[in-house]
Every structure is written in structure tokens, then in C-alpha cells.
Length: 64
Image (cartoon, rainbow, N blue to C red):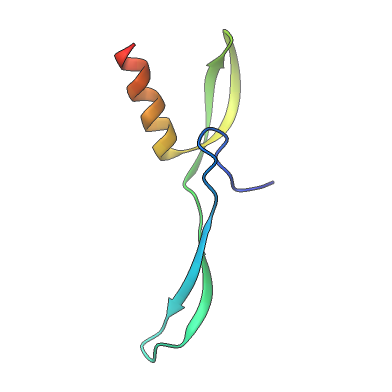
């Protein structure tokens, strides 16, 4: 099960933790995934989407 947004394709980012002594250890920033039910071709479908993608989808729905 990948931590990928099904709407926008966002994936986790990687980088370094930095201690006080500036020692670097690897870390990961995961995507804020939420399970949501959206209508696709008139049928409800469960998707794993990022919170940002859900906000954008809701904003587009209110404009239309």
C-alpha cells in the first residue's frame, strides 16, 4: 500500500533530521492522506487523497 494521493499523485518527500551537532539522519515527510468518498461517473468511490487535493476538489465543486 503506497502513500500516494490518487488525485494529485503526491508522494512522501525525504530529507535529513539535523541534531544540535548538525549530525544528519534520514527522515521522511509523509503526505496527509485522508480516505474520502467521491462521485465518479455518478457512483460513489472511496479514494485516498491528500488534504490539499480534497480542499481543491471542494473549491472547484462549489464554483460549478
